[in-house]
Amino acid sequence: MASHGSILGAVQAQDQEGAADIDTFAASLQEHLDRGDFRLVLVLDEVSAELERIVGYLDSITINALTIDLIKLSVFEVNDVQVALPQRISSDLSVSPTPPTPGRTNTARAGERLTDGSDVFRDSFADVAGEARETFELLTSWAEEISSLPNLRLFTFTGIEGKRLTLLPKIMPDNAGLITIWNEGKRPSVAVWRSVFDRLAPRSVSSVEKAIAPTRFGQGNIVTEITPQVLDKLKEAYEEASER
Image (cartoon, rainbow, N blue to C red; front, side):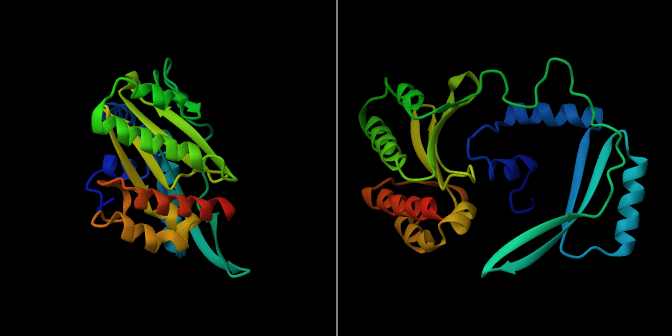
C-alpha cells in the first residue's frame, strides 16, 4: 500500500470498472471501523511455527471483530509455466460470518449496473460534440471491432447516478481487461493495466510501452494521447491475450 499512499489508492489501482469513488469508499470504511468488522489476510512464502502460533492466538481472541488468515504461497513450475499454490495455515475460528447490515448489499450499490455491449456507453456521449466526440467514437468503434475476438466480451459499467461510465473489453474466463475506456464528466480517456498485460499479453508489453510513451506503462495509468498507432498496438495485445 505504501506505493499508493492510501487504502483508497491501492483499491483504485486494481479497479478496472471505476466503481471505487472516494465518498462511498470512505463511508463504507468508516462503517466497518465502527463495527470492528475486518478480515486480515497475511500472504507469505515462508511461515514459521512461532508466527503460526501468534496468528492462531490473535485470531482466537478477536473472533467477534477480526478474522485473521495466514496463507503460505508456494510457486511451482508446471510444463514451463509458473503456478502459484496458496495454502491456508491458520484456522478460522469464527463460527459464522458477521450478518450483513439490514438494508445493505454486498454486491452492486444502488444505481450501479453492468450491461453487455457498448450501447449504453454510446448513449452516454450522444450529446457530446467536437474533438471529445471524435475520440469517443474512435474508442468505441475500436472496442466493438475487437469484441469479435475469441474469448473476448465487451461490457459497460455505469457508476452511481450515471456520472461515470466505463467500457470494458475483457478476456474470458479471466474476466480481466488490458485497458478501461472511461467517460467521466463527458471526457474520454484510457487506462492501461500493466499486471494484466504481464499475465495475458507479455509479448505485447514492449510495443505498447513504446506506443504510449511518454505515459508510464503502469497499473491504471491514463494514456494522454489516443492515436491510431496506440490502438493498433492495443489490438495486437488483445489478439495475443485472446489466443492464450
